[in-house]
Length: 213
Image 1 (cartoon, helix red, strand yellow):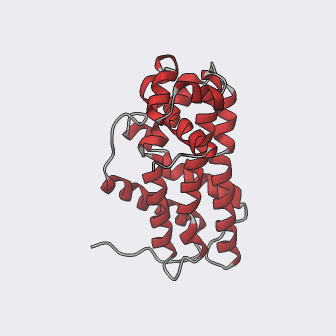
Image 2 (cartoon, helix red, strand yellow; image 1 turned 90 degrees about the vertical axis):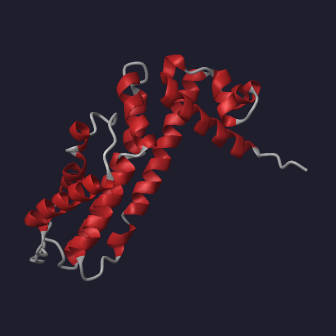
Image 3 (cartoon, one colour; image 1 turned 120 degrees about the vertical axis):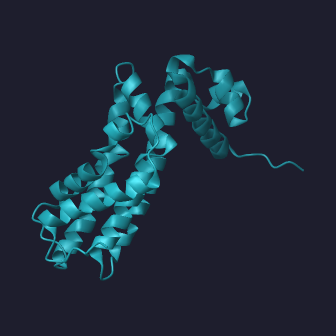
C-alpha cells in the first residue's frame, strides 16, 4: 500500500517545490504546473492549498526564511557552553554561519529578494523578521551571557552581535559576486578567523591570540 501524505505534508511539499522553481526560473518564468510537478502533486492540489501564484511566492519565501533561520539559530548552540577556548568556539560558529550564508537556498533567497522587491515589497519585511532580526537577537543574548561571565567586554550586546555578523558576511558579496560564484571552505575558514580576530580585538576580555606556525 502506498502511503499518502497529509494536508500539512502536501502544503510543505508545495512550498518547497515552489521555492525551488522560483529560484530556478524567477517569478515570471515559474509556472504552477511546474511547481506541482516539483512538489509531486496535481496542479489542482496547489490551488486548493494556495490560491494563486502571488500567494505561492509569498508563502514560499516565508517558509524558506523560517527554515534558514532555524539552521542559523542551531549554529549558535556552541556559544551556550563555549569551553575554555572561546576564540575557537567563535571561529566554529562563524564558519558554520558562513557555510549557511553561502548555501544554494540562502543565495537563492537573496537573489529573489533583490529581483522581486518592487513587485513584493512585503517580502523584505517577512524575510527580515524570519531571518536577520531574530538571528541578531539570539546572538546578542549569547554574547550578553558571555559578557556577564567575564569572557567578553560588551556594553551593548545588540551592537556587538550586529558587528560580528557584519564582519563575517561583509566580504562575501564581493568575493562571491553576489552569490553567483562559489567560495571554497578554506576561504570561509579564513574569513571566520579574520572576523573573530577583529571582533576579539574590540570585545575580548584578554584571551590570548594563538600563535600561528
